[in-house]
Image (cartoon, rainbow, N blue to C red; front, side):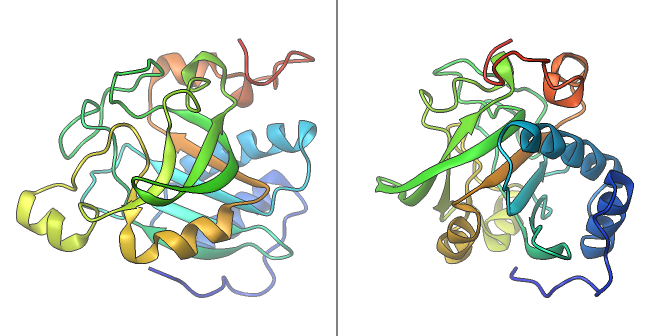
Length: 219
C-alpha cells in the first residue's frame, strides 16, 4: 500500500524523537521494534552516512498482516509503504520462528542489511541485500537473499491459504508494488529484519557498541 506523508513537524534531532516520528507515521508498527531499527540505523550511519530510507520488517507478526514499513528519512520522516512480506519456507508457516544464515537453509535471516544494487533475474526486477550483522546475515549475498515480487504475496493468497506463500529466504513482496518499492530503497538504504530472538538481540553489534573499529560484516 503506497501511503501518504507523516504529519508535518516530525523532528529527528534525537533518536527518541525519530522513533516518535516513525511511530506517528506507522501506528501499526511496534515502537520497540522501531527503536531497535533506529539504533541499528545510527550505527550504520557512523560508518556509511547518507542513508535516505529505512525499511523495517517485523517477523514476529503473522504473514497475513502487513509487517514491512518503508520510511523516507529525508527532512521529516514519512511512510512510503506498509506492505505484506513473505518469510522463508523453513522459517515457519504463518508465523516465522526459525532463522538462519546458512546457505541452503531456506530460512529468513535477522539483522541489518544495506541495499546493494538491482538486477533482473528469474524473479524479475530484484534488489540485492548485503548483510552487515556478522554471522547472523553475512551470507545474504551468497544465498541470493534479495527483495523481489512474488504472486504468492497477496491478501487473496493469504485469505485462501491462511498464510502467504513462502520464499527461499527472501523478503518477497507483492508483485504489483515490487518495482516501486525497490526503486524507493535501491540506493543508500537500510533494511532491518526483527524477531525477538535472544541470541541475535544480545549478539548483534549493531544493537550494541557498533563493534568498535571492527568491520561491520564480521563478528
